[in-house]
Image (cartoon, rainbow, N blue to C red; front, side):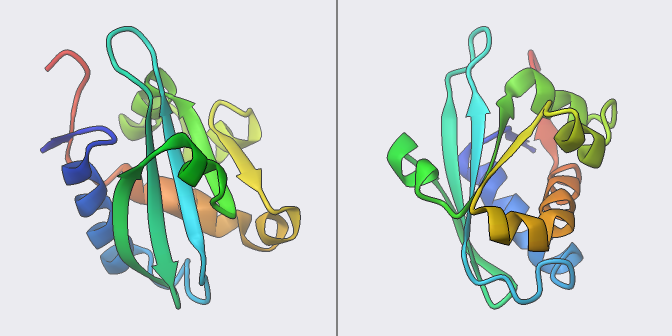
Length: 133
């Protein structure tokens, strides 16, 4: 188990994306930024998923500028990510209600919004240490 947004969590996320959602991200050939925004005692963390030909070839913690340069970005507070990961908030509903924000290149987003939701569903499968554990 790993704390949300840490390198160990990102490594597990990338592996699960390849195992569980490679069909959903087939054809993707760009990066995805993830932001876990500060709340309480947890600091903001930014991450970058390197996706090439539909395969996550790496995931790493990055600075805010690298996150902002990603063609697709998904961001939200830890509290909102926690709700999604615990199954209290459906990933697609989180995007539609802007509880998690999806941003980036509009053309890419319109063509691949279902794959972005699939990546969020994949995050739900990562063994994540609950807040306060």
